[in-house]
Image 1: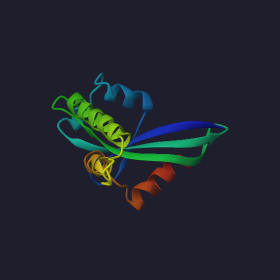
Image 2: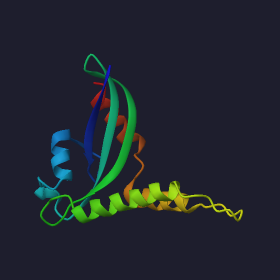
Image 3: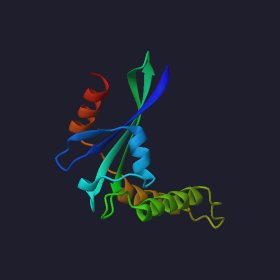
Image 4: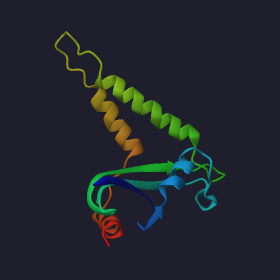
Length: 137
């Protein structure tokens, strides 16, 4: 048994486009561009799954986010940096010492909502079905 991962870009009409993980990594590092997506914010889906005999058997994790492309078709580094900073702030808030005055420190909850609202989206049943068909043909 092992783990595999697959990346998809989701078009405006909810069609999936498989992207090789190596290509996705080069996109995220700004080393590659997709000219057709220049200046657009595109939904993406990362799927982590268990494999037996090199065949997917079970989906373990699904993460839905956005890729913001700059005017040259590269993933915007400023947006990725902002996302990273927000994630670090979220982790820091979750590990803060609680207030001793009896007031509940809910800062991490509000930061989590803000992070999810800005950087995540929920897939529809149709998108999840397409992912399942792609993995388990």
